Image 1: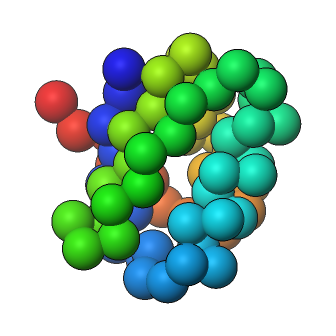
Image 2: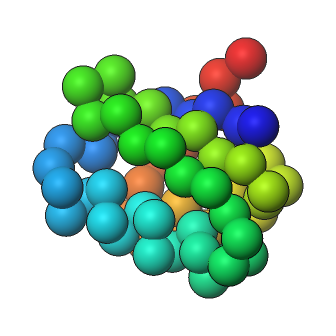
Image 3: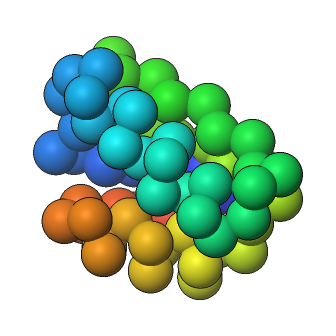
Length: 65
């Protein structure tokens, strides 16, 4: 599982956009968005692919440890 911080994420629209975009990378992806912590946990998708897809829709994700 990869965990990413997205500072620009702040609303339900952001959450939905992220879920839709990551599902394009793999329909079996599991995404858990925490708007308060500004984090996204992703399962079933390579970290590099997650970073690429999130940048494609205008975010600057940071991979967390």
